[in-house]
Length: 317
Image (cartoon, rainbow, N blue to C red; front, side):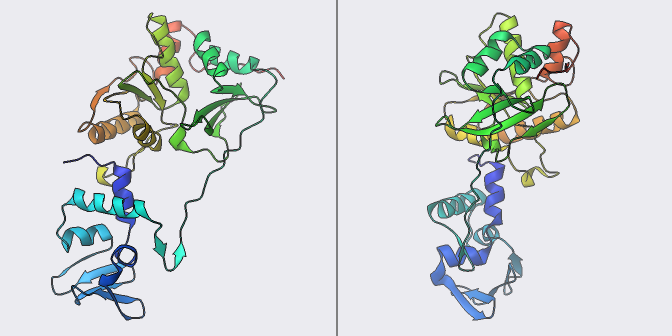
């Protein structure tokens, strides 16, 4: 069975039958009265108030996906793929109104005249100086003004900043810049690898890169990707969305075959790891590597270096 991302399935389920017929099978739609419709093929199949019922067969549902499976006899994956193809080809009209997704505009904090405090903050977290310098030189990290936060950027494939994580220096503040798009979270990519290492946070990613360098290994030979926070699957896996950053990454890196999950070693991290392993194992070679010490990779790095975990210091103006 082909692999379909949970987020794609969720979106396919959102398409109601009336909207589907109005947009993609209008010749089969018959208006009875008011907001009640049926189909030319089955006059006992009534559509009203967001639901449909095929009374002669005693079956019904809400979504177009249910209709394609129960009435048209499609296999589940075939029905999902059919909806993907339909909705990808044209704008969907709901009640004569065109629904367009809201475009996000990233508003970046002003840059400070130097990055002294940001560099010191990252060093206090155990991050290697060469790794820090690489991120600053490539524009992935800078220090903001006047709040003096560490700003960690994610870019789209054109090199445009689309996501910004903010971390307070000397405080516990964590946030995102207005207009941040989690699809483009912080990462370090290469075109030479079929492997991606996945982390919850940018700091964990940088910590892993530092540990590779400490071990004499190349820290930039594989893809490194942050999910921009904790991934929380639904109570039922079938109802779970998929991390936006990972979905975007796969769309841009078809060469990837191996996934190393390096999420936090706590309850939320373990649940997320199991869910992602379940979703991805059919198509990719998935390995799980939680930190051997501490809650996350930065904890592990700090413990290896013998420095305080999550150390912070006052910053200079």
